Length: 289
Ligand code: CP
Image 1 (tube, protein in one colour):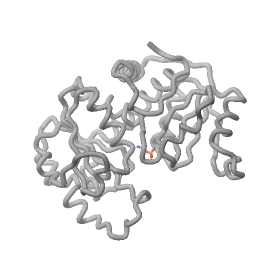
Image 2 (cartoon, rainbow, N blue to C red):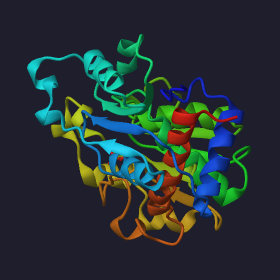
Image 3 (tube, rainbow, N blue to C red):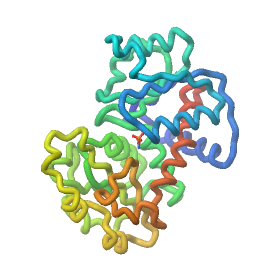
Image 4 (cartoon, rainbow, N blue to C red):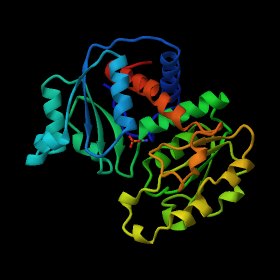
């Protein structure tokens, strides 16, 4: 069964096929899959976990509940043995969010389908697919679209997943962030140099939980230099859109009253997440040309 671990090895044809299928689900196509899945979330989540649950429900899948706090992980069981247990009892796929980057390397030898719901600062492939789907729906293509990714790039699995997939699909990708948060990417510290020419402003959450020096962080200073302020939004192209994977730090990455403004697609991204996750579950459980 196909796994979905990273955007790095996903071919354009597969990405397009998953987006096409998500579009069919969005337009009311029904599908029913006879199978059982488990959502193994070792890090907090609202959107990813709940939209997988919604997608699983819509596909008629049986979902076995799993609570980390009441599992044998607390007795020291390894991730490998937990996943092997799911496999042994007949589960068809596991969706895993874990704080360890590339946790899935531990799972070699498991035959159960594994869908990555986010691995530390590594990858978040279903978020990237729903972001690509949102851009594709908006512009009708991804090639040639200028996406400016703003914020905590180094700690962001969303930035990494999207950067490689967007470039692979022919988009132009720019990064704006404090120099120490640029990670492997060339970046600018001047959002105003990009605001008028970009098609998509993709804001990233400041990930305080992955920082060691967050006591020096000023929300006001960050908002003024890297945030989408009301003044900056007014300079955006008429056709340009705002995206953010959420959760949002309102008033930090984006002015509170822009979160639901006309050009914001933030809640649309969440809606699209259900359709993309339906397509991904079908791909993992049934395979798809
Ligand atoms: N965008 C995203 O992954 O949100 P959650 O952490 O709430 O799942």
